[in-house]
Image 1 (tube, rainbow, N blue to C red):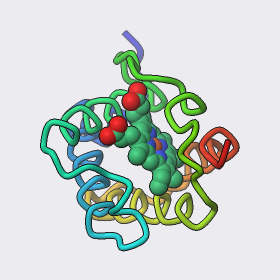
Image 2: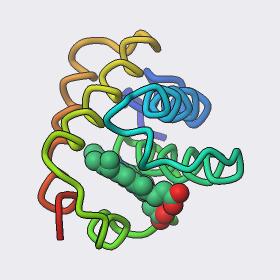
Image 3: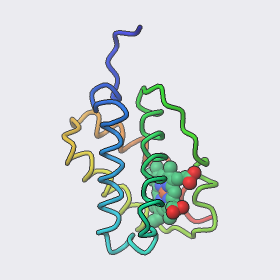
Image 4: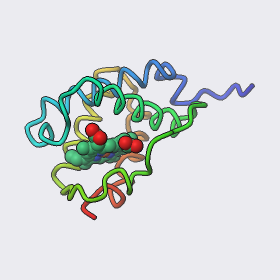
Length: 123
Ligand code: HEM
């Protein structure tokens, strides 16, 4: 077993990231730029939280496998613009802050998410 601590360990593993994913979606629902994009049914929320949790775990040193679509296919045809992308990043930042993720890990997670921009934006 590795003794190197990962972001996944520091954030509190699957449950820690599940709380962060839940908070991201909560902030999206409050965000006037984004709320029209997300359905209001709890079932949709539950599925989306599961997939976002898996994605965050899998890029942070966790053993979970991401079972959703790749970022290009997941957002294809949605015509997502630059402003919406930045609002999503802002909400991710708020959720990390709410969950007391340290600055270095926040910087890494924000950079990893920012790098997805070309896959998520309008196509
Ligand atoms: C770093 C940026 C983003 C990440 C990591 C991300 C992640 C994800 C993931 C993991 C899914 C689920 C994929 C699946 O169904 O298999 C998803 C779906 C979705 N994303 Fe994103 N996303 C990002 C940016 C955005 C932006 C900017 C928007 C638009 C405002 C957006 C809107 C949506 C919508 C509407 C869905 C589908 C929800 C549903 O089916 O009910 N995403 N995203």
